Image (cartoon, rainbow, N blue to C red; front, side):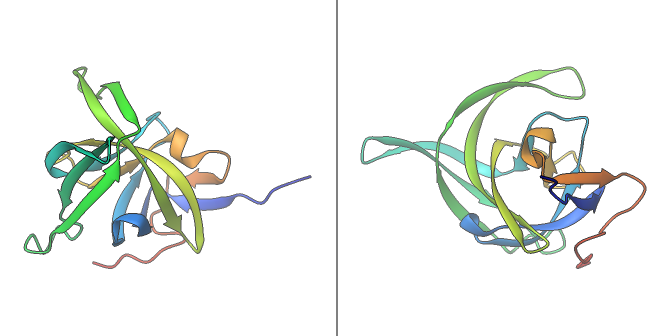
Length: 146
């Protein structure tokens, strides 16, 4: 049985429907194992005996007034070694990721990516065996909404 894999570019406009986020420019990075999302005002909370995280996202880098407040079940925490060599322990959530009419669950580490060009990075674990990446192109299956 052969499965047709979606060929995507090094940058795509994605959705995180569980979090109410659309048109999120996402860097596709086959060199990264984990996926990460830039968040502000991150707080760990307990609700009904379960651990959650609450956070804010500014999904449109050109409109910082637009803030989406999110709450998600805390899956666990993971120690991540960043590209600059530093390490930090980040909270991990699982949420649906949508691209080109297809959706699948991804685990995201939550962190401060304010020094990065894009608010989200999709790593290899988030890609699974569903996609192939053409690093020479951007927006192959989505539109650049800028």
